[in-house]
Image (cartoon, rainbow, N blue to C red; front, side):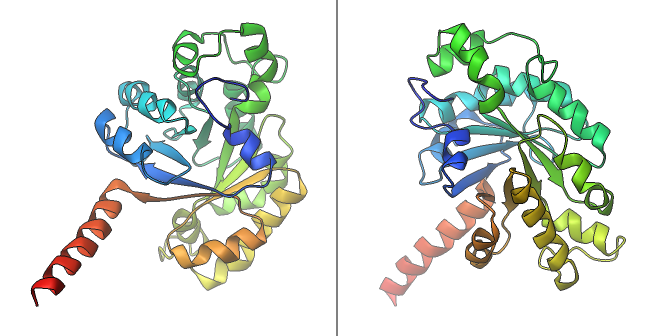
Length: 264
């Protein structure tokens, strides 16, 4: 959060400054693994509770080494677990990604869990976060919290696309996050999973353009790294990619190739 002793720059501040943010994707619920992941060149780390192995307990423990590195910790909650959004923020997360936001009511419930009154219904309980980020001025924390805790609503179905304007108009929704694989499943009515499906490219662009026009940030799960430049030009600022297993696989392949090549 802005002004906090151990965090050099908040996620909200970076996005407001139109910076590009790359987030490593974590599915392994182990604090030592997160410590190593946070030490890499990624700008932030996202803990995935929806499809990764993270639980409420692992989020509590695994956010600590990310915050200690001065990097924004982000949590993707399971579908409909808006209560966990508040918990993640209490543990020190700077942003929460909520999957399957398919209606204005979904967006309202999510925003309510993310924001303090009068904007939302989040309750006060910051002892864990304060111990981790060093911010002991509760008045300052409360004053800044609604602007610093970012609510990312995932747009990944036809239903969400059809009511996109209503989701974007929901007070307390700061950003959208595009899940291209699920979006492709919905777009083809369950016939294909193809995150680079040409038929939905125009719809994805429309989501980005509408969100940016509404003053919202846009995140995207990046499947092909070569797409980053094009999507950044379109208006995407936040990219999540590369779960631990992928990083290990690519790193191992690269190192082994060099070693074997030296042997001939």
